[in-house]
Image (cartoon, rainbow, N blue to C red; front, side, top):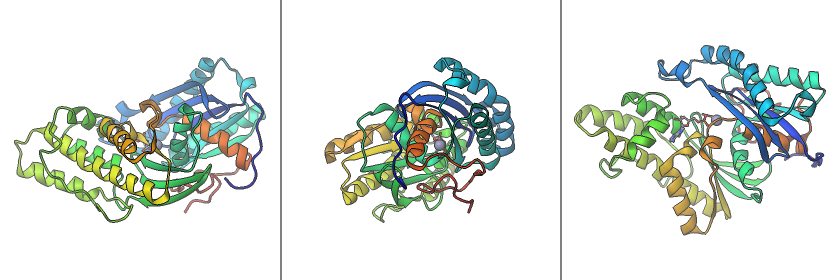
Length: 348
Ligand code: KG4
Ligand code: ZN
C-alpha cells in the first residue's frame, strides 16, 4: 500500500458497511481479522421477478434496510457507538445510488462518533475475505476474483499492491451464470441454482466452447452464453441438468486453467479465490485439486464470505487505514473503481 504503515491500537474495531449492489450489510471486525458480527440482508426477493438487480429499487431498499442492519451488527458485537474505532464503507465499484446510501451513512456515523472514515474498494474487499479466516495468509499471492460484475486474475505482490494480469473482455463469470439461469428458467441469482442442478447432470454431455482458452489471461464468457442458448433452442428435449453441468464445466475449466497458468508465471506460492462465484462447489473442488497438483496453498473463504458481505469491507478498511490513513469526507462514490485504485480516485 502507498506510504508507510501506521500501527493501530489493539483491539481496533471497524464497523464495515456494504451497499454496492443488492446486499445491505454491516459487520464489526476487530484488528482486521476477527468478525464480531456480520449481518447481510439480501434483496434477492425484491429483484427476482425482474430477473436481475433494478438499480433504483436497490438504492431505495438500502435506505430502508441499512439502519436495522447496522443496529443488528452493533448489538451482535455487543457495542454501542463508543466501542467503534473507525467506520469503513464501500465506495466503488457498484451502482452509484446504492453506493451513496452506505457511504453517506458511514460518513455520518464517523462524524457523530468522532472516529476516522475509510473508503473501501469493493474488489479489494473481496480479496480480504480470505484474510478473515487465514491468520497466516501473506502475499505474494495469485488471486482469482469472479463475481457478478467482475472476473480477473491478479498478482497481489503485497498489501494493496496488485497487478491485474487478465480480465473479462465481455460478461463476468457470475453474469454468465445469471444469464444462462434466466434463459433456462432457473430464477435469479443464477449461480446457486446452476450449482445445485449441475450436481445431477453430466458435465461431459455437451462440449460447450472454452472462451479464449490458451490465449493469455483474459476471459470471454459471452460466446459460451450464446452457445448454450443456441444449443437448447436446437435441442429442446435436452436434460436441463446436463446443460447446467456442461455450462459450469466450461466456465470452471477456463477459470482454473488461467489461474493456474498465471500462478506459475508469477511464481505465486498461494492462490486466493474471491467473489460470489468462488462459492461454487465445482470451482472450489477443482481449485483445491489444482493447488495440490501444483504445490500451491489454496485459500478458499467460506461461502458466506465469498458473496457480498460487510466483514470483508471492515477487514480491508483496517488494512487501508493502517497504510493510507483516513479517507477525506468529501470522497464520492465511484461506480467504475478498478482494483488497486484508491478509494478517493475520481470517477472515470
Ligand atoms: O460477489 P457477489 O456477491 O456480488 C458482486 O460483487 O457481483 O457475486 C454475485 C455473483 C452472482 O452472479 C451469482 O450468481 C454468483 O455470484 N454466485 C455463484 C454462486 N453463488 C453466487 N455462481 C456460481 N456458483 C455459486 N454457488
Ligand atoms: Zn461483490
